Image: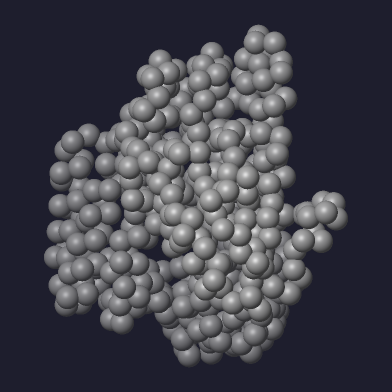
Length: 484
């Protein structure tokens, strides 16, 4: 029996080394399917003998099935990046390689929580099927908690040993994951037609804590057990709270969503991470971006955007044709990242079910049916973070910080023409600064940009300043190139 290990990754620099080390010498092929990590995940993986592929996230099940397609062998060992084979499990798998098996194999998973092993709380033995033949098994495409689907009856046999699961290094990690996963579970529940009333919000979290901490003996795991059970109960509250919000705002699943932003290139760039955040919770949703001619190349280079709608072409059509064209996109949601009266009116005429905008534009009160109250100009938050407020009607309620949004800054950009490419340095890090706005947002200040330029070592960075004509008072630095 020859075995291919399949691992899907995204920013797993804390875990992936231990995972791959435990696979070394155990399997005949290692496939890593990475969702464009922005940390050192790729660098660490390439230190091992692995086949490394980059793929925009398709959903947990689809991403794993993609790994099956890329695997060299029929037998798949499916392992998460935060899991490690213990010595007993390694021996059990090694013995199997000498057999001609017709089974699938399951093992116990033991979770390490902030340095403590959890043997109760409903987290153990947490049996998982992880070794199987890909010709008879594929992962389901559920939004969360994907399961193996077998094409024919297949006996399941246990393996000795454990998968050691290094789940959460800090309590903050657990809370962030709870927020992310409860969005997905709420969405799955909403799509299944489930409801949540006030009694669910009150009693289900209480029952969750009582069951896990007392009936499932979580108290035997000490303080770690109490923490696990408390956050699990809170996650139950989040799930039903988000389900109520989803049922209020969404009457049917989101098949197609349009992000609308038709202003400057830099502002469009700050809005692109919204697509990645939406894909995390709605991986099956088609995301279209409504933009201008000059933003098309940038938008189409972003891996989380599925299509571009050219506003310059659309607005040249007769009114009736514009509405007909807009209807042809079959959008379930339109988000006005940049407010524009004619687009808001068009979205309503096209009968898009959910139209999200800010309450600071009077015409949104007429044309939008979900208004959010926040101010870009008066907020200390970066605009890219403020944009995430617009996702609240979709059940994505956590305000994402700048440090988290950086991980979504990934472009597959093919630069055409020689005029711009000749300006770029092939050896230095090219930095583009956009110091001025149109007065609609807080500015960092030209003097701060000037100080930043002086701080960046010239042997490492080449600096460009765009919108130069609007920065007349900005004293030109001999370090800076210019662009329009």
